[in-house]
Amino acid sequence: MTTPPSSLKRTPLWERHRALGGKMVPFGGWDMPVEYSGLADEHRAVRTHAGLFDVSHMGEIRVRGPKALETVQRLTCNDVAALDDGKAQYSAFLTEQGTFVDDLLTYRIAPDDYLLVVNASNTPKDVAWAKRQESPGAAVEDESAIWAQLSLQGPLAERVLQPLTDVKLADLGYYRFVTGHVAGVTALVSRTGYTGEDGFEVYLHPNRAGDVWDAILEAGRPHGVIPAGLGARDTLRLEATLALYGNDIDDTTTPWEANLGWIVKMKKGDFTGRDALAKQKEAGITRRLVGFEVTGRGIARHGFPVSVDAGSGPVGVVTSGTQTPTVGKPIGLAYVPAGRATPGTPLAIDVRGRSVAARVVPTPFYKRKT
Image 1 (cartoon, rainbow, N blue to C red):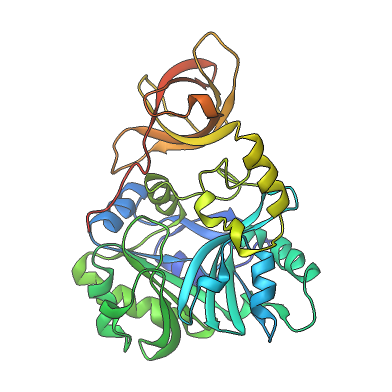
Image 2 (tube, rainbow, N blue to C red):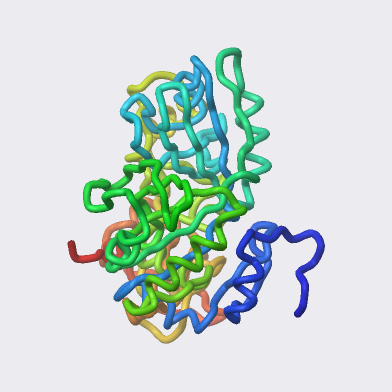
């Protein structure tokens, strides 16, 4: 068995991924499975049944103390005061320039206790950034080493998970969470996801992650549940038009430009990046992230230049792009001038030196039936 480079971290499920035939690749400093049975099979399983992902590489930052609410309000752009116990929200850390340090989930465990779940590759940066803004009355701690995270995603997720847990999943609303037991193991169970499907995250101590992983796969086998890797996770989130840090958002882009203005609550008071966002909004947004479909022959990939027509120079760049199993055609996301962001607008994408026709389309590309 080939071992990963010593510089790569392993999740507590690494041995299981190898035993299941997972194709391992470096990702965000971790040795992670990109696929098992095949990207398309895993993608379709999540859309029709359910798939189980290991996302233990994600980072967890805990903020606790009497000033925890005040601190998280300052650190994030969404309104943490809108949360009650057991509620989560999508948010972001922003630079003073209003661009992304990272996107994240904020979980309110108690009025003085918050769990912030951040991207794996950004965890050291995020922890250092948050600690620099630490103030008396709220401690910021990196708890990534004591959490593992499993994600069961798909229309049959509730049916598969319910027999294994004492949590009444039917009563667990979207972006809600509760502490309970899964396969006899104490865990935090949330209902969020990164695929566009219904699903649950199970947060638990790493030393029991393997037992719970095995139990979910065993319970899910009669329902067509299979392990799924990073490849399917990426195509699923693209169809659902969920942003990926490092591709669609980064420290050069703002929430206004990325169509994530809904996570920015300007009226809540001061937060890092607020002044810059106010100035940009007043001046007007000059570019926007749009969805597109390729109408010519070719697949647009990350980094490919985008023009308004075949004879002009590039005005933007593809941030995410591929052909996905559900949509069945080449799609992607790209930043274009704000005046070219209307659905139906023609674009030209440079696919390895060849101009390929595309057009702006409404997003998300895929939306599940409820």
